[in-house]
Every structure is written in C-alpha cells, then in structure tokens.
Image 1 (cartoon, helix red, strand yellow):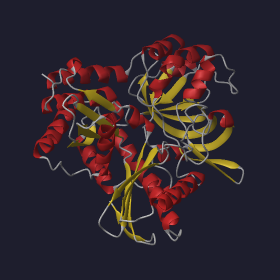
Image 2 (cartoon, rainbow over the protein chains, first blue to last red):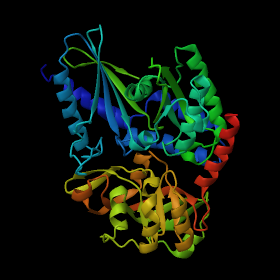
Image 3 (cartoon, rainbow over the protein chains, first blue to last red):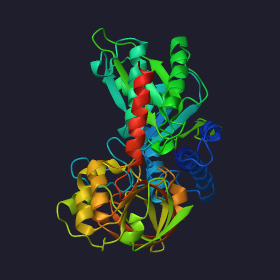
Image 4 (tube, rainbow over the protein chains, first blue to last red):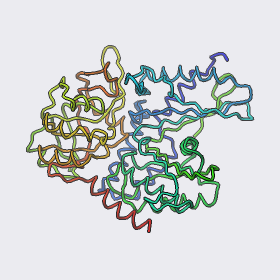
Length: 294
Length: 190
C-alpha cells in the first residue's frame, strides 16, 4: 500500500474527532438544557459545555484535554493490508500529538515515563473486521480516563445489589454503576452495557456500543424497553450535569447482549463522558475520502 | 452573582465563600495531579510558593511554538485520586483553593474547614473554554520527570470559571447530592 492519502486523511479524522462534538450529542445536550431551571448549576454546566463545543470548533482545539484512549474500528475489504494501515495510523497519531490535537497521554506502566507521540503497546487500539464492500470504513472513539475509571463489571448473581440473573438484575447493575459514577465520568454521559460474554468481550462490546448514534434503540425489543426504563429511572436520581444536581444525569443508554457460559453472567457497564468524541470516514482504495460519517 | 477571586487568596475572602457560589478567578494557578501530589506528600520540595495559592487538578494540552508554551486545552481532572494526599498538602503549604472535578472526600473536607481552604468545581471536559482564560504560561516544573500531563504548570489566568462545592465551613455539595441520589436509588430499586 502506497501512502497516497491514507496518513493525511487519518490525521484529519483524529483532528475532527478531537475538536468537533458530533451533532447528535450536541442536540442531546441542547434538549437537556431545556429541561433544567435557568438559575441551576445544571443549566450553567450544560451552557458551558455548549459554549466549549463552539470554542473548540472555532479555535480548532481539543474539546477535552484528556484526549483519551484512541480506538480505531476498521471495516476492511478482503485481502486488505492491515499492517500498512496500522503504520499509517500510528504516523497520523504521532503527527496529531505534535500539533496539539492529542495530549502526550501515554505512560510506560513500569518506568512511569511519558511517551512523546502516544505510540505504545496499547496505544492506539485497533479493531479490524472484514467487510464485503471495497471501501475502507474507519471509525474512531477517543475516551478519556475519567470516564474509563468509572466503568464496572458485575458478575451475577450479586447479592450486594440484589441482582439476579435476569433483566431486572441488569437494571440494578446499571443504576448502581450510574449512582457510583456520580459526576466523575463527566455527566451527562452515555452508558454502554453488555449483558453476557466473558470479561474481555464484555468490555469490548460495551464500548463498541458508543459507535451507535444517540437516538437509536436496541434491535432486541426487551433491551430497547430496558434502555427506555433506565432513562426514566436515571432522571429521578438528581445527580445532574457534573454531579452538581439536576434532571440530566445521562444523555443515553445502549444495551446489547452476547452469548455466555452457563457458569458466567457478566453485566459490563462502560461510561462515555458528554465530550463524546466519535467520528468516522469512508475511504476509497487509495485512501481518498469517499464520505464522512456521523 | 459571580464572586471575583484573585491570587494571592486571602483567608478572610476564602472563609466568606459558601457552597453553590460561582466564582471567577484571576492571577496565578498551579496545576498538579497524581505524581505531584505523591511527591509533595512524601516531603518533596515544591519548586513554587504554594502559600495562599491554588492547585488546579489538570494536565493541559500544551505545545511549544517559537519557544513559547501555548495551552490549547486545560479542563479539570478527577480530584478524588488526590484524596490520600490533599489534606496534608493543604496543612503544610496553606493552599487556599483546590480546583478540580467530582469533589473530594472527608479528609479534604475536614482540612478545608480546619485550615481555611475551598474546593471549586470547574466544568469537566470544558477544556477549550477554560484554556481561553489562560493568559500565560509562567513556568513549568517536572516536565521531563513527570511528563506534560503530570507536570506543575504555573499559569496566569483571567476570568477562570468555577463553582464552590466544598466550602471552608466544611459543607459539601458532592456529599449532599450523593446522599439524596442514594435515597432515590433505593426507592427506584424497591
């Protein structure tokens, strides 16, 4: 694979993800603002968030200083050279770091040293999936440490929260996780929930749900109903934006299920902050932009 | 009404603040997070004078352009990670203002009441907006030792926005919300 446009357009994907809040998320925050009292902290926080989104676009600066873990989800055609695109992506990440679209945000876990360009053994993260079509689909999620730290995995039954191996147990896990997070995940965020799988696939799937747009619902009817129920429950908690009180604690909840072993029943909850950095692009066979996603 | 706060932060002005008040900060701020707090807690010497100052829990995105540091993004990080260290640092250095997100625990709340310090919450993630209030980078310490995100940046700010969530009387908005949301949670789970 010649370099062609690959590195340039992958860099542009990173830049856009870092500075440009997706429109569905921004619309969700605007809807939330209307529900809050004008003299409340909730209103002040949401207004500040919207102002920050506008400034980030105008000044071409990161929405949040914690530019997070970069996970690239690739959908590639048969016979595609994944080693080459990994190299191009790493080069684009290094360039985006030098230009201040990404923070020097990658640490050697043994020595404590900070890497200059964010290229480490687990940075960035790559997920490949083969697709039938000729185009290359790239989606990027940037997820900061504050939201990552409030993620939780439950093993049911969990008697401490009275959660059995059913959807009511799943509901208890989600509400417990949201309550524990308070404002620390940078509320109002979105939770991604995976029911089932093993410990690793549970977390992986819970995060892939952040690729979904805010307004959509699970295709599994029972899970779609649970998503709606959770949104109603959460509104009553009163945790509010940044945990300072108010009606808006979450912007959305996404639930999916994976098969599991008879012995295991995991419920995995990942939290994405309001600074929901998600962008995507469809690239042609030479790496030229076919279409921007989201 | 927005209260104006200016460095150095006088004890009587700090004692005058109450939970829920919005503030606008001008003057010097020192950033510090996990590495710096551990270092100071272990008795390491501060390269700057923290007395009557503010520690901002933040790791900015900064780039050097023509020999000058430019901060492109600088929102708060989660403060709770500094809970084991904060009270001792407030006591030892007489820091008057802590800025971060998510609030802090009992030890910090008690230290705020005992020595006269407040905790301010800035809007998490509002990094571009808060960076606009940074007018200059005066200096940076521990850059090579701790890395850019963990270094101690001395900043000059103007109109930096935050809200008081733990005051010097020991009141905590975080504690209040945690308790009230717990009561609702128990009802919802019945």
